[in-house]
Length: 104
Image 1 (cartoon, rainbow, N blue to C red):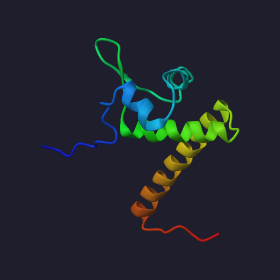
Image 2 (image 1 turned 45 degrees about the vertical axis):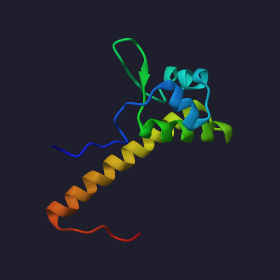
Image 3 (image 1 turned 180 degrees about the vertical axis):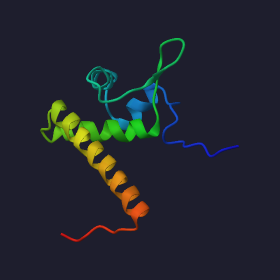
Image 4 (image 1 turned 120 degrees about the vertical axis):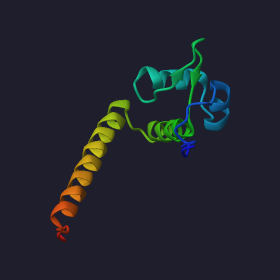
């Protein structure tokens, strides 16, 4: 049997999520509607979240409290994702050609 990544497994219901994050159901549904969080749905339509989602919700709520706009959060994530992708490709190229990053 393979290792299960418990942080990404979506098994936590809305009630527990509200207790863990301190957010209301309304806030969490709003973040979902804005594309900041992506719960899975059961056959009955109930939302299921992961521990990673808990961390994400807390991070989003904290940024919004600090004055960030939803669009700011999304744009920053796109930039970080692109940077992470670039870093991965750079690392693969460095490994393939046995080069090492130069210090700037």
